[in-house]
Length: 324
Image (cartoon, rainbow, N blue to C red; front, side, top):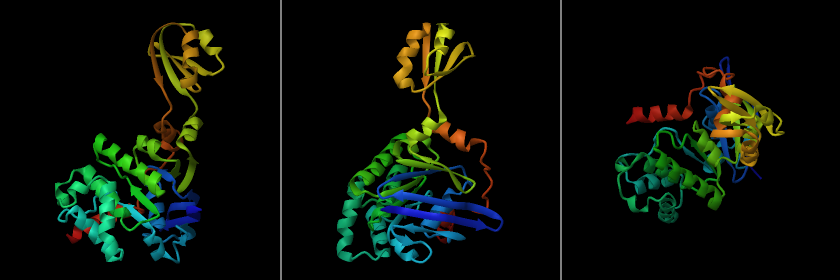
C-alpha cells in the first residue's frame, strides 16, 4: 500500500507555479529524499502533503486520506520536524512531549508510557527532567523527532533535520532515523541539502526542478546515470594501453596527470593499474550525489523561480517567535 500518492498536484501563487503537476507514489516504510535548491518547489510540495497549504488543482492521498477533503485525518497520521527549532526552551523534555500528547488528544493513561518509550528511542531518558534550554543542538533535534512521533504517526516529514549540527550529532540523528524505518516501518519524507545524508538514508531520491520531479530513482541508480568514476594517475603512463581497455571511457592530460574516466572503478581499478605502465601516484574519485545534483539540477535550475512560495516551515517559526 502506498503511504503517499499524488496525482497531478499543482500549486500556483499569482503567476508563479511552485508545484507543476507532480504525480508520485511513496510506499509504506520508505525513506524518500526530496532534493532541490531553494525555490524549486520541495517545501511547497511537502506543505500540501501536510495540509498546511491547499493545492490549486490535483489531489493526494496521505495514509489513505485525501488532503483536500479529509485534512484532519491526514494530520492525525503525520508528524513533522521543522527546519527551525520548535521545542519550548522553558519546558523540560518530558513537559514538551506531554504538551504535544495533550494537543493530539491522546488518552491520559497512554501518555506517560508513550513518553518514556519516545525518550528511550532518542536516548534522552536521563535528561527527561532537564529544561530544553540546557540541551545541545543534537539533543534538541532528537527531542523534536520524539515529539513528532509521540502520537504514533504513520508518516514523518523531516525538513532539514540535521541543519547546523556538528558531525557527531548529525550521525546520531541519522542512526535514529534508520531505527525508525527498521523497527517501526515509519515512512519518512526527508528534505536536505547534505548529499551525504540523502545518500546514506534515502531508499529513493526525487530531484525537483521548477515544480517538477525531473529525476526519481535509488541513489545508486542515479549515480550510475551520471556515468563514470575518475582515476588520476601520475608516472610513466602507457596511454595507448589505457585507451584500449573496454571499461575506459576517456583518457586526458590534466595538470601533469592522466585523468581516466572509467566504469566501476571498484571492479576495474586493478586491471587499469596493471595496464598503466610505471605508476607513481593514484587517486580515485567515485561518482557522488553531488555529481548527480550538479548534472540534473545545477545550472539549469532558476534559484529565484519561487520567491512567493517561501518556506511554510519558516513562516510558522517566525509567527511563533513573534508571539513569545
